[in-house]
Length: 85
Image (tube, rainbow, N blue to C red; front, side):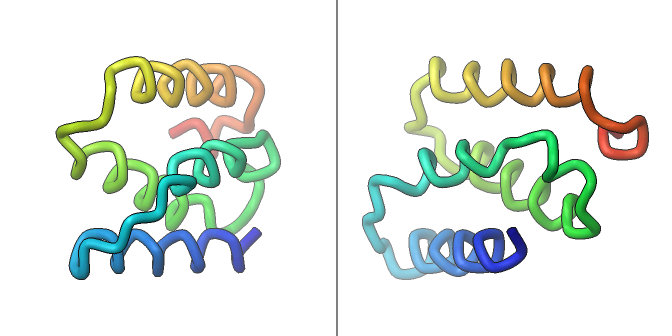
């Protein structure tokens, strides 16, 4: 999981700084949203990447942001209290 988070973070930096086009970025980020991500010690890094990715792109459709919000709410209900904060 750490490898996936670090590779997506590297892709995100390349997308922002060097205008790399990677159409599967948000799909890959969404697949990492799993209850086990809240139990890892790298959850803060993942959640920081998620918030940067969703807030930095103003052209992102509302239904995509809504699907992330819905998934995060479901994870907050099923995850540990420390991971939900």
